[in-house]
Amino acid sequence: ANNVIPFSVDAVTRKNRLLILDGRPRWETRYLKNLFERDERWDVTCVWGGIGSSNDILARGKEGDVFPDEKNILFSYDLIVYGELEANELKTKEQEWIRDFVGQRGGGLLFLDGPRQILRKYSNAETEPVLGLLPVRWKKNSPPRVAPRAFSFNQQTNQFLSPLPSLVSPNSPFVFSQFAVVYCHGRRRAETR
Image 1 (cartoon, rainbow, N blue to C red):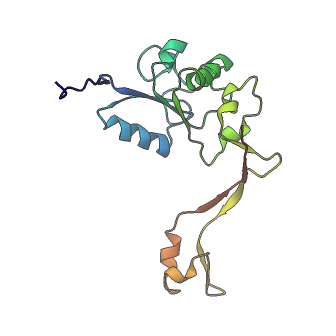
Image 2 (cartoon, rainbow, N blue to C red; image 1 turned 180 degrees about the vertical axis):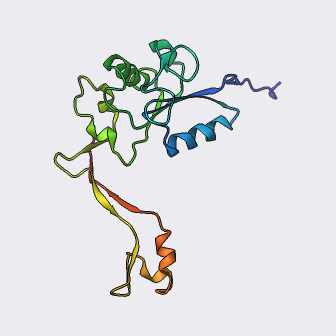
Image 3 (cartoon, helix red, strand yellow; image 1 turned 90 degrees about the vertical axis):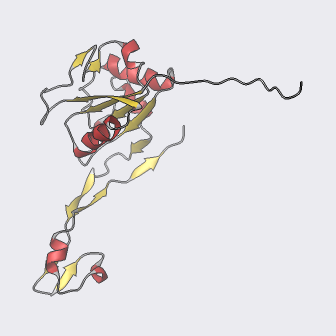
């Protein structure tokens, strides 16, 4: 009988696990938390420290919204979102766990730095092992970021201070006052490994 084909099926019966780490509950990490919590395929643990959270530092433990206090618990996650964490927020040993999570376990890691550019301050690969996982290196002595400059209307010259003056009528200074502040971030140099 030539109408038989053997095949196999792999079924994943557990939820994917996401660990979100941030020094404070920023808009970006709150959004990701809410997004993944609505997806029934994900189990989300979100650990915040600092202003706006119930903890001054990241809480540690075995269950709940805490940073895992054992390496094997950390390895049970599939993805880590690493937000604006000061270099000393995690112990060297805990950063080594994250490095091993990516290098040995094959887990996913997403760095989500913010306007304060906390990750830029990481400088010592010995005490800050996650530094080796960052996909960019900042040039030494480059400015952290150019100061922001908002769109505005100069009433003395009757002109807009904006790179986009043709989008609205020059008689609409109110429109430009509603635009978000534009930020220019410091230059980054990509390195190959």
